[in-house]
Length: 90
Image (cartoon, rainbow, N blue to C red):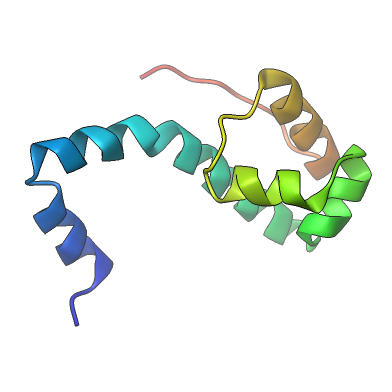
């Protein structure tokens, strides 16, 4: 069984896959940052949702990278997670 890094390298040789992968990176970076902050704060998706006055399914969709969260939602997430929201262009 191949590990993810080997499989990813092989799959990125396909130009269509590479394009889709690169287009989805912002959502996945956001998802990873939220998951890390939530785990660091030792709270569940349900607890985070309650702090934000939203539903667990909203948190789940964001953490799965299935949505592009608004700046407003990201600000609320940052406040609920007691972190600073930073946006960068590289």
